[in-house]
Length: 516
Image (spheres, helix red, strand yellow):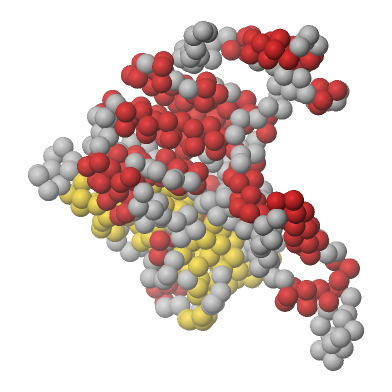
């Protein structure tokens, strides 16, 4: 009997990796050799030895079998390694039912932005039944805070390396520096994992972590190629009603799919006037929009692009920055009108002098439109006193510690949104006098805490008190960087007594309304 030998996936290093990688031509050659095997048994043996299998795609001159093999970060990081770590911890008794209950208690205290949602009460059962989106929320947003102090420091540090890498790589916008740091953190995690638990627990997913960087360089940020959108489509297609006849299900699903797409792809020629409603002169396109508003169909517009958020609004100068109301920011209905107080007018003028340093602020119109929500790129930010209160905490670059005046080069600092409004400002510069519309926010800035980085990046600790009101309270919405998950929690710091100190936990998060 042949003894089964488990593959050894240990030994994590990128030194000399490029020299050892198989080229596209080598893989094609191996695949052709496997194709020409004498019999099926020999073919299977050659496939195991070479790791190559012939495909008809090899006949395409432009097909690159190695380059075009993409590692899916959703299965590789979230459904793969994250889930595997929890299994190893349960097996090695790193966690217990009591620890799971404490983790669940901390997670339940977290207030996540409205479109991200909460992790259900499954942690007590050992993370059973978690979806990929729930794993992402747990790994990138909640785990650093929820695990601190509940497990051994060695195991926590290993997890922190993995969570840090996922936070950097699972982003809509990624820089080369973040990509380098993310790969470095993954390699350190794999090495620490192997040293602590042994190579018998190292998996092929951990080996594939070393190739994620190249996939991102080839195909862009993970949001452009991971399987969240495909899984969502599978869920949508699976929800279609059929007659449950196995021979017809595929045809019925495809018929519904094509019907939905054809309705969405009607050309703009529908702008012609409708012959059925001449009196009101309603166009066919308007009638079509009434019947099929965006997002109303079962399919909707499922294709998504990377975040259009650019980094220009965080530069240190205001020369080329457009802070006016534009396509990237939208005040959402319903809107109410109210007049600004004299103090609010002065704060708006002070804000305008920062973003228009070379212009004269001649007039701030008193009547403004207020709303409870604003859409910045693809993320919705709400007011603390509204139903969108869970989306009211955000990081912004505006407040300067120890200064009465805001600045564009200020460090990131969390704030709570109190009001959102549209304001008209008349400015005069070298090009003349013009009226500019702005979407502004009135915020409260959180106060620094001496143990700000107690949990490690990106989790931050802030005092529950707020900074005194001042000119920095009025801020252009474009200065918001990321929304934050928040938690009012009692933490036992080294200097605290038994009960600990009640503080605010702030975790920056990325919106995922289009990820699944």
